[in-house]
Length: 486
Image (cartoon, rainbow, N blue to C red; front, side, top):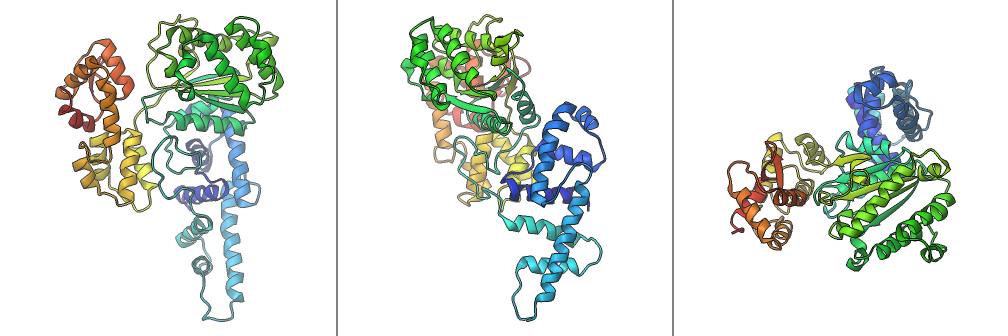
């Protein structure tokens, strides 16, 4: 059995056991272990720490495979365990076949598969396929039917595509005491989906998690610092069932002092496990400069508290933060008081052709060639939402790829809502309309004033190339906006 065949069987077994596919880092460990490499060699080759692989990812992987195979599986014996699985299924099937006394009795597809296995004394390609079919037929892949690509990709979905090494870096970082992760990308790039997976990873390591969306707050909340921090404390405290003392703290101190006291004395002191708080859509606070400056200064102070080395530091080490935003931070924050120049910074990029191929392969019935993938990416680039929306409609036979490409930049296409949304946002700013019009009508990348370039890039409409020069992010935007911007 070669590794690729083994990997298919192992992945199918994991899906049956856990409702998810193997992660890239798990595949790396399996592939390297198959080659006889030690953890320190794997770590050095793939830029991980030996500690992380040997005492975190590795043990969890072997535990998961042990549960799937029903026996103890480890780094040194997983190949033998896989072989025992094949022999076990072959023996069981042989006994079943001997017990069948009526030749006319219909056999299930899995029994027929096992009959093929037992007819060969040696391990064969057919037996490999049979073992794979046992796992894949035991339980269908979760979410094999594509869901409409709206909002966060569910944790259990097969249609989330990892962008190595981003996920693994985030998973390592969130387990570090007092850590802070910043995720930035335009809308519909997968920020919230990544955030959800970071929180899920934290929960698997016994962390408590709280997710706060700034999109849910009323505009009036941001206008006043005290009102905003009260909303923030209530949002966190409610989810942790620790609201009972908030009123006592709010009657004294200044806004930032009482927020810090509430977190330290009522939240961090009361929990035994690390607390991960994700803040989604933090760019909603950017226009409210005074509130934003004070709030971000507060987050930076909390981040620094974990490094002081005193008793209080041990409490603040429990707190880990994930900040998610679409827009560039265009607030004049003091470099020593900003959370945007510390911690792990993640900027999500478009899908690569290889990642699009992975996504295509997870859509039943889509057997696209590299040429077909290139045609789609020539139109929409690697923008995750645009790619997924196209695959969803083609897979459901609502439209062919050829029809999609012909109609994509029109008002009757599957992208009409997405494009109209961008057009509406542009029309609120005449200066931005003029700037983007220059970009889409130019055949070569051009320079814009820094403010316009900053805004268009934050909206996801342009990409930088040749240093400060800009061009449309994809041909879809060029074709659609060429005739709609004056």
